[in-house]
Image (cartoon, rainbow, N blue to C red; front, side):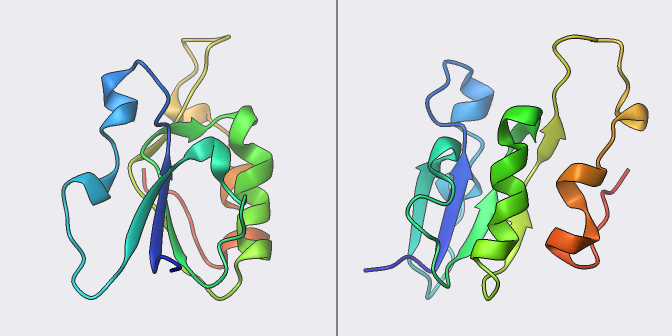
Length: 118
């Protein structure tokens, strides 16, 4: 049976914040079948027509960029909800969220009219 909603987030982490960041761990969505998967399983197998919840955690990071960009192309009929998604900067901890380049992650060509909330 295919889930109506699939939530992808970091599930293999020892970081408790990553592990417990799925909204599906806290909320039931009446009338919907839901499933929780690790972010590394994004797009495998295909989402089909399922809606996707991505996050939370620091998923705006180069390691996840390719899958996030391909998500809309591979799931044009499903909705994509970004839940508590933030960015990571391991090489320059002083990099502010104000200076982070969100464009590759949230460009209009992949997500329609969508912009980060500051």
